[in-house]
Image 1 (cartoon, rainbow over the protein chains, first blue to last red):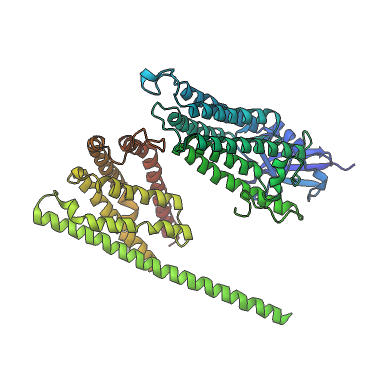
Image 2 (tube, helix red, strand yellow):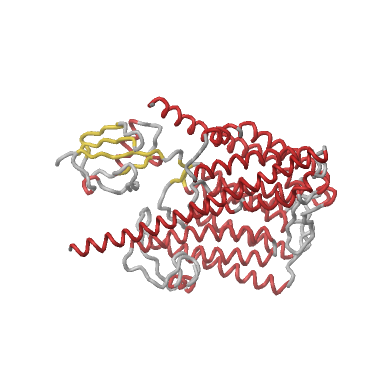
Length: 308
Length: 242
């Protein structure tokens, strides 16, 4: 068995950072990253980007050395991705915030509203309903993060947690302040509006959950395989016929429901911003599906059937 | 095969011709735009000097030039478009922030809060803006005409060092002066209860705007300083070769 020699150069300065000799041909990039980490302990594997070309795409951890287009002395280029944090940590933090923050406003903790309202509750039953829905939504997200989602990447850049938490926590506080305000105005069309909103909200919550389960089942535990999702026996997944990322479609629906339920402009603003972001993600995902799979169904749109 | 090659060359020529025409149209438009803006701000400068010489006071000066100022400052919104379609190679966001802050000062502070229009701080930032814009637009104009006099280049990359902070002082003092009037009148504000379940307090919004100068101003200032160093550094290298 012929062994490989591996040299790792800095992608920007082209300095020789590391030289590994007697590397097994069946070694993976992940194993090479661990070896590189030994000589440079500050660069743990999660923050290493190893590529064949200084400006090229990152190689995957699973890629095997002997199947890469390299000679027996392989040259790789290294870029530091910066401090990393695990996706699970980010999700748990960014979702726990809104859950707790909203409850603080709901229970009218001191120093938010005028002191005569401390620890009082709203006289409108829709406010209690909204609290239950909002809390349910984030508890669902936390549980899905722990038990349902299978992440492709282990980590993301550390600065994302500050950006994401500011977004989620900030909007949660802004919404919760007005919904739980002593001067809150309930929806114009009263019970009818609230009932319709609740139906839409619950329908989309179940839908969103169904999609998450279907996506999870596409991927065996511990793997990072990618397959085309298809409708299952669950009717909530039949939307896969028309849309690539129905999880985002249902998420939009849930927040539209919540906007209708609370008739609160900050909620509408949050729904709009979220929709814009999810559309960007959905279009990206749709594009990578089309690139990866020749037989990808042509009827599907990224996020809104036939529209977007 | 030979005819195939010829077809390729013909198509290339056509695309290159289209590109060249688009480039010429863009250059022509930008030249016109920058000449027009230089002229506009010159008109403003002349109007201000004449008013002060005739009346001997700055009181009433703003009212006198208000229409012209609003017109030419608002027209600058086009510059965001220029960046967006790529005929000017500057970041859309940087240009957007700069133009928006000007529009905000003109329309949402000075124009709508009449009581502060005779403040000295208003004259300060209007004078600073006028000097800065005349320099900037004539710089762009001469650049497009490939005939840049050195003193214009010098002015563009040196005057901001003093002009920028003076302008910021003028703007901040003006916003600060407007605060009591905003609070008293409750303008641009929305109180609870209302059917949108949202509120907006223009008074606190203005305070936040003033605070935002703290992170934003240094970034823009150092951006200009870096540009200046790049331009001057380039000059030194050329001189050495000669």
